[in-house]
Length: 89
Length: 482
Picture 1 (cartoon, each protein chain N blue to C red):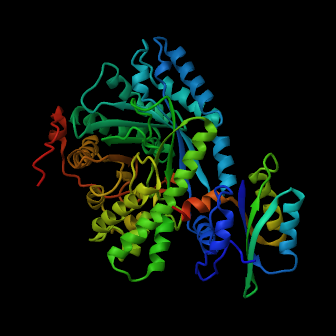
Picture 2: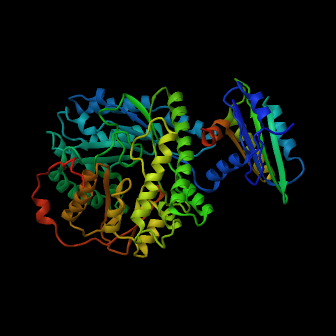
Picture 3: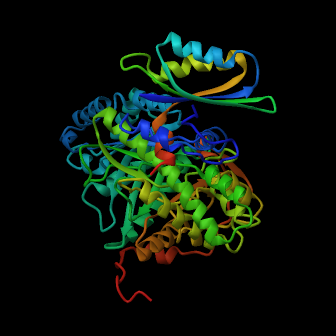
């Protein structure tokens, strides 16, 4: 399945590196990423592929939440279907 | 290489056709736009978008037994077995999709139908069994301590109705409802008279807990059989063995969308509500299908409702005010609500494969922060609320009335509301809370989703003789509609 990871917060060194390492440690493949910094405000949207039989989406969300708390960032991990169903007919 | 999450923060959309081609056939993924993603997250994080309830409907027809003890055990066992994974599955979906699912609940076959074959008339024992089963599977409410008496009473029904106050006062999670009228059958005024007394009794038995038992009792006209919302949920006799119904919510999202729109005309307002309702309902549809798949249970319906909570930013009244009313309850409120209710349905219908339940904007006074304020400042009266119920779902809901209100006035309020439902071929309901020991201007505080109820003024002219007549109000004509 695919999930969308969103990261919002004050810009600092290493945000992408930390998020990516959690993905890599859990065999989660990054399919696409888009990121911007506006007035020190960091936003990133990452599309990832979770391996079949690998880490469940909920567990990845937990790990990202821990990172989010450590780095004072708002990180969400959500199944891509929620966006597809809301914004695509 | 450009991002497939193309787009920019200002909301512009730049779909990149080449990449779209390259993703064709690679699964469900379609082009996602960054501003769309941020919109969804804003709705959830800041505008209180949530799934209000996943409600599992369970048929109890195979649980009846002449021995009430055996019947109650059957009921408990069946609910505990069927709903064993309801809460954990709801929690899984919540986490995976990142959408809050506020309540997981259960609706069962009207207990009066199961209890009728028992030799004992101590029907409240069923309520205690339901309460234990609900606690065992971890749901906060279970609905179905219900009787359908719109055309008359079966032999057990009167006895069953008389146990409702005791059943609600003695349990935490059980909800009760009674259908006293339909468009096809008319209104059972004997039941209406009885329910005035039952509502008072329920409040009196829990006077030390802000009369909470009355918050768990709904009197319906044209009750839907697949409603997922409490306190009126039950699993109708025409429903399948087990089913998942989902109720969505999102008054905050609608209000925020209207606020962003600024000074557009009312056609524009209706359009915005439709689009927002579509998005909200799509999430409900997704969750409903996913929950029914994971639980191995039929998908029933999505209830297209705007269900408020007492939280700031989750109010239906504030949507009406956003349209341009100083307070909910001002003249113009009924028109604004009619527009809102209709647009919610129009937007939602296309977003879901099966729509049902109550489907419309709810106006429960104690559960809506904006309505509480309007009632406190005197802008909102019971008479205005009654007019509003003619154009929206559901009825006079969560209204605290003075504790000395006589039973026949409560019955007459029920009769008025049922007449609106009967004649207009829609569901109406009454959930009044007589605030025992309190009077106009005082407040009841229920906590949680049930909120705070300012005690509202009631017209004290006596309808006693009218209510005492009993009998049935005949079903209305369905043609010659002018």
